[in-house]
Image (cartoon, rainbow over all chains, first blue to last red; front, side, top):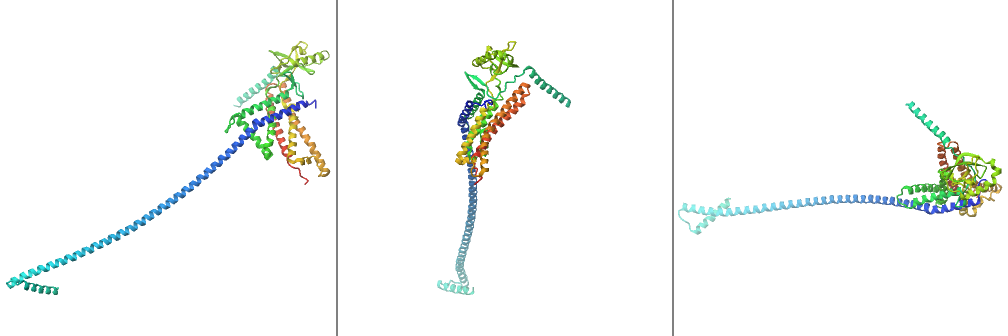
Length: 164
Length: 343
């Protein structure tokens, strides 16, 4: 062993050296770097998770947005439909009212016409009586008394009325 | 076209061969004395094994790198922090694959083995390690003729046997060596300062000495590899007992399995010790052989030729560090699993 260079003291010093080196490297190299690696792994994991969450959220909100949009579209459709119905109804009403008014106007006009005619007839009758009286005077040569006159006219009118 | 190419290739070959030959002629290197035990280098009046100094150098390198990497930790890493994270994360992943949820527990041991062995192995390849040190009078029977370069001494490739003066100068040489110890100072490039009086001389008066390098790869010292092997196997036993309690020992002293089981237990016991031996000698052998290979290459053909071998040693250094760490991990993983074959 001596020839191979074995020496208990040197052996021991190499052992001590190794142990001290191990402790120091553990303190100043392995621990900080392994901690840093662990920290970084943790952070990367967190970031990935956050990214995944954000992606989910985007998908969620996209879906919500689309749903919202569809609903709005549906509602708009309904509103338009309702408005169209209302307009239709209103149109019908207005038309009905207009027709009613027209009918009333026509009725009133007819009434007026009828009245006018009656008026005209009455006037005509009067004038005819007057005229016939004047003609009769001229024919007879003298004037009838008022009473006779009236009698005559009435008679005449009755005749005329009958003939009509 | 091919002619031009051929002539280019020819020129390149000539240049390379010329460099190699010129290196051999201009700057022949000394083949250092190869010895198994670590050289004792005088530092501040103490004699310290240069492999221990090398280990301390590796420690300091690692601690400085660790400090720089973690000094200013950022969420988005760059530079050294990024590199350190890459290494640690990679090795932690490997540990997790083998150790599962015990990874955090075993990781510091395994990682430290890997880093220390790797850095110590790679420091060997840095110029100056193995070649800068203190020049002392020869301890053995041969030495190198010294050349004075400024205030320093350089070893020349001229190796001298001291046998012819053995009888006369043995006593004086010893004394000289002792003197040299205290007074020797730092040097550079196979150079070192020495007291001329302490050195034996050649017949024409040139001093003769040997180099004691300040640094020598840690793993070329059996104490280093054995220390790691002992720690590794001790931790294997520790975690085995921690996981299985006294049941851990049934692996070694197997009374339930009859004679066969007992023999298997015996073999298990022996193999546990064999692991210590194989651990320490695998690393030691590989790195020591690499060192010798580099020495001999530098001695035979100092220029260009050693370069591929440096690449090879870079690889060997990495592989050995990896093997040591991963084997430790595998033994640990094996120790915490109950051996209940006979239930």
